[in-house]
Image: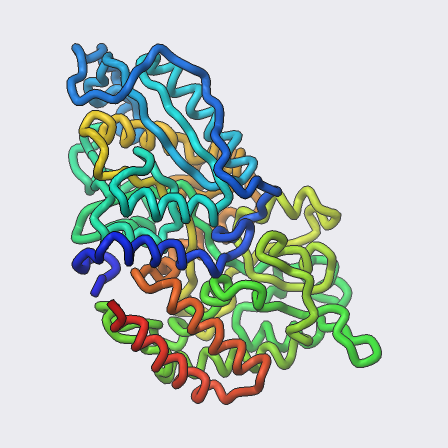
Length: 487
């Protein structure tokens, strides 16, 4: 069985891998189907992104004489000119999930790169997350697919398990070793894409899951959304009960809300609650389930207690595609989401009438939070030259984290990020980075999809049907054990 950052499991057969990854996104999280981010309407089918043509031909493993390298900025691991770039024509392909600001910025980066390297042609394909994952799962299992893939970090374990990922090529970075690259990131981040001691992906989007608060709602009950923000779940229960509004026996505003529209979103809330009680969903080596452990039972009991005090859980219009709609429309006063929601809120009717604080804790002195995001990976089956250029393009795209924040509201949790004036201007960026520093990645396991559904159903049984938390999690434990043992 697979261990998150240390031991990889033996690969499964291609067909099982395909079925696993296709299934993994049948339960989607917000924004668009698999990423908790606000998403525009997108076509169901794969959509090619047109890029400027260049004088380039098919990939080759035999580059011509190298171009003159340009010196990099001293100490800049993501700088230009640290390897001998080929002058022969190279064509690479990159696939990513559709999100309008992200796509616009990627097209801009492709144009810049092709201008810098006229011998390189980059073909691009964009799709909704569910379509992209289905296409990727089939292509990667059959030994085809793009040179560069965009994927949910929780899925990298399955790709590594199948042995289709190429480890990072440090020679294209201005780095002497992998340690130089690791030093560029907040400590908690790269373990999500590190297996057997090697980095297999680099994140372009890392999301904290933090508490967003309606300043208008807090003012109604005489509280300040920043100064009086809840620090513990007990605080949240008390304040949530005050914020709740009921009219003729029906909830018209919840004090807080859990994300019942998506089992994957529910896992994003449940995982850190279990960790706050000192537990985890799986054993350290990820070979055993721990869903009915004492910490897990305490977490589900707390979840249910919070729900009883904050309003009817069925009162919601949230969907995976419109996951912050209740918060925007005033149907809930507090809501856990990520930094990607910033621009959506600023563009809505509530504009800047909201605040962000850290995820509530059982013990604020020992915070446990969760992060969720996406990373670039390179296809191991491609020619050596293509893989080298692919890693160089990834390096190029990640060189300016402040641009990612400004243009897509995506955080690259790099060391020194807050030293940049433009980053400091991003609303509540310090809160998001603080929650990332104390976070672990959302569960990453070849059976993540099955476990996600099992946990979601356990929560629903307790909250919606009144099942005792321990009994519900005993059932979940049995289901999880069967899922992990299945071939």
